[in-house]
Image (cartoon, rainbow, N blue to C red):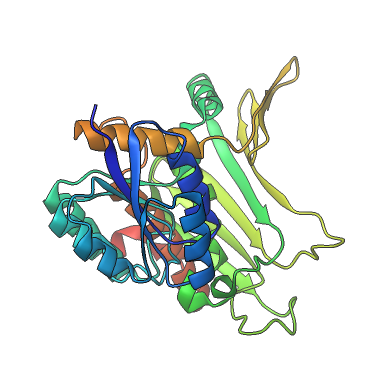
Length: 330
């Protein structure tokens, strides 16, 4: 079997992480990687010295003419037309979330990817957790009325994260995982209403992301979900919480991020524990799809991830305009 020729764009935590997983796969050749950070480029080269190193991701795409796939792990504002270049060159894409910081550009990328016929997966790895499927199957025997999600924690130290024009803010860059899992469970969102607050964090250079937000998602099915976010927790003394609680007529469901799922009623409860191990199957599924030119097993194709992005984009619009936003208007 010929090896898949793969390149990694981005040398931050996720770029290094995905490179480690790629190097475990016998049918993959890591042909190249690119990052503008000299120190990170050197670290990538230590891990795979046979790969060609580029300081510019566009140069990599121009020079590496026979790539099968790109693993894109760059900041949300640094895509620089990667999707369009890959589509024109027939290179399959695995995209880390979020898809960007501008809805118009994301929709243009969706069109280019769709028209090119390349395989494209987005890194919503939680969809590959079999415990999520087991929980979802239990919903068929109940009727879920409301869901409450929380992503409350510290401010990430990554410099670009705290600048909203670069990251999209906490809801777009971080809570997107919550929104995507809720969509995976309950279908598409009809409208969004969100409010925010500032003033909890002081003295953080270049910081302009909201400290906290509260968002109501109205699903097309009628289900209501709240998503409460905060990035103000003291890293030394505070306590973070990342979870979703879902309430049905007969059961209560809890999803603790990268930890466990639990369902319970008055008579019984059941717990399934797990860890943060679903990036590998998400990436592996994409690579198998790229080889077979068959995207049917990808659980988060680009077009579906656009719906998640639209929902988070709508939350930002609602925060700014103090009004409900219909997704049909976007």
